[in-house]
Image (cartoon, rainbow, N blue to C red):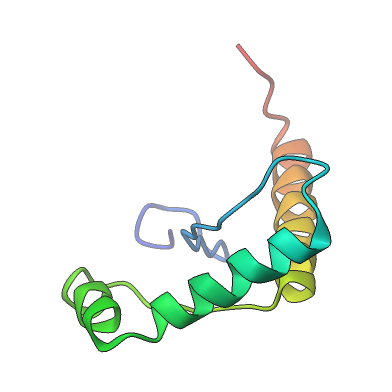
Length: 86
């Protein structure tokens, strides 16, 4: 972002797996275990590395906190910049 003339701004692209509201905690835990296991497979890691991606598997509570932090951070950035929907 500094090269684009916006110093001090770091942008991290991330992808997460979400489930519909009301999904049981047992199903969420099962999906989380399966996702973490898939991200640890050599083939998955290799494919990610080839694409320049870095997998950071997180426990459900950790990911929930991360999403909240991102929401707050970007909401603050948008408000501070005075960005309005068009």
